[in-house]
Image 1 (cartoon, rainbow, N blue to C red):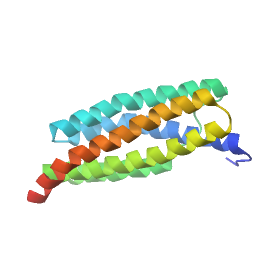
Image 2 (cartoon, rainbow, N blue to C red; image 1 turned 180 degrees about the vertical axis):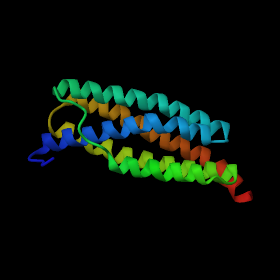
Image 3 (tube, helix red, strand yellow; image 1 turned 60 degrees about the horizontal axis):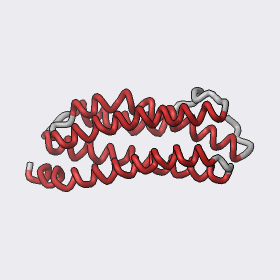
Length: 163
């Protein structure tokens, strides 16, 4: 899509996020199943529910924009998910796999934090206050998920080192 102005860029970014979040709703159950640590598994399952809410928020934004959310594939998220799938299929020590899953999940969170931060900035510049609020709510959840993963990693990384 040729982008001519900030509004078009905003819509393009939102479509990318919509694709990314939908890909995650399909990928996270497999990641949760692969996790051996109970706290990690619970955190991934919790984030799946949040991700479903992120999709709904994006759909609300597209309704307000009178635009379709479809038409773009987030290749960045495809790559991140493919790396996680590879890690899962290769197998290994459960603690080391969990540490790797956390690293993979944090890459996803950082990707989303960046994308939602940009989209929120665009919405703000475009004067879309309600959209700013919706994007900010998701951004806060993504940052909280990243912090939770950091907390879980403190223990799991030590266990993986001992393996």
